Image (cartoon, rainbow, N blue to C red; front, side, top):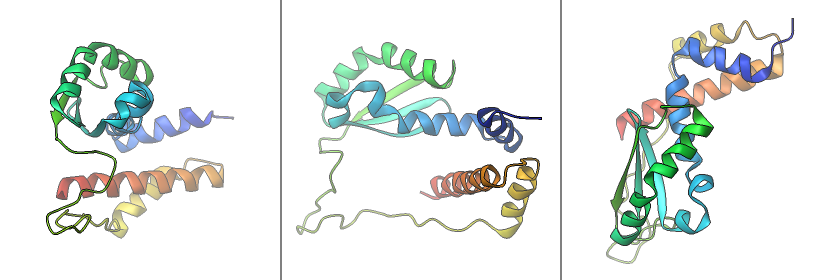
Length: 162
């Protein structure tokens, strides 16, 4: 029996209970593709929680401009991710450049910026993921799935601590 890779991955993500979280993290990753290069230079999707995509914007003018385009942006995101994945977008003007390291008082870049450190999952959680992947016959696909699931869980835990 042959199973398409996207079907196998979707099924495995469903069993892990993280389909919605993965899709919402994809919304953050695809922000630039959806809004285009001009808007992407002055905005950055930060996170998506409970269906709300949080976007930092360089200034209030761009926040207003993107707010006017919100309905179209939501349609494009949900067309790519599946209806209802992103319910709303919240824009926050930061007053700074979003794609370069911030410069803090004292002239040192990145000083004062809190950096979270990713920590390895406990062995029990890794074992649970490997057990879920045991149904995947292709060894290469199985390993990709396991790495993906572990990274997703580590990222989720990291976001909870930040």
